[in-house]
Image 1 (cartoon, rainbow, N blue to C red):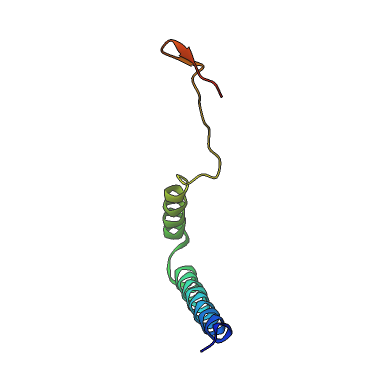
Image 2: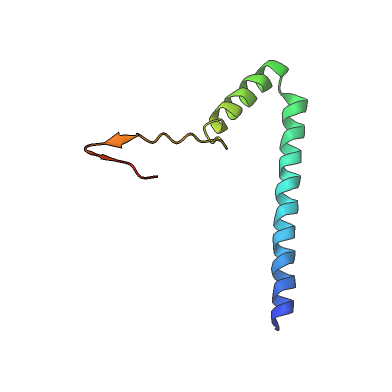
Length: 74
């Protein structure tokens, strides 16, 4: 097998996996929307959202102006 054939096979595997994951997510979403009451969905989704709220894309870095006898050189 040459490198191009290996690359094509690898790409096919990744696309197949991505399609399977997408189909599973869509099926799960349909089941949740059809069979769970709205109140329960709200509770589940807010808990899910709260769990991933910890992973923020914004960070704050606090640098103390001086520590011990020397000042920070930043």
